[in-house]
Amino acid sequence: MGLSDRDYMKRPSEDDGERGASPDAKLEALLSGFLSRHPRFFITAGVGLAVLILVSILVAKITDKGR
Image (cartoon, rainbow, N blue to C red; front, side):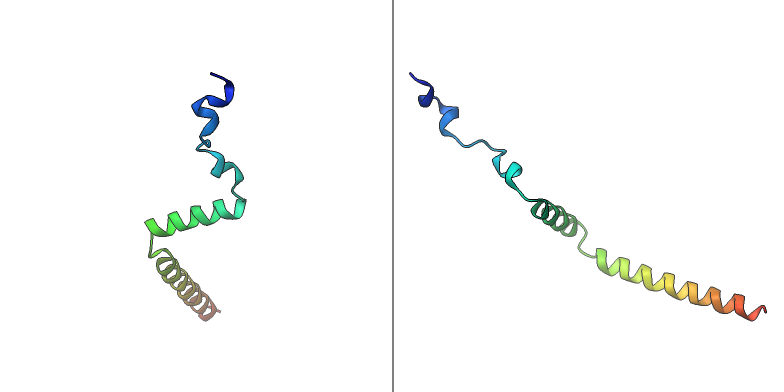
């Protein structure tokens, strides 16, 4: 039995796909996994941002009337 007959020489290693992946592919996989776990993230973030803007406008108007 020679070296080329061994089973591990014939099989591709399982981590070859991870090493060859580009940083963009890794980022895409990370974001798609995050968005699959939290599908309403952008809706929640948008509502939170809108509330923050409204509160800051309200605070600006209240402090302006004090002058």
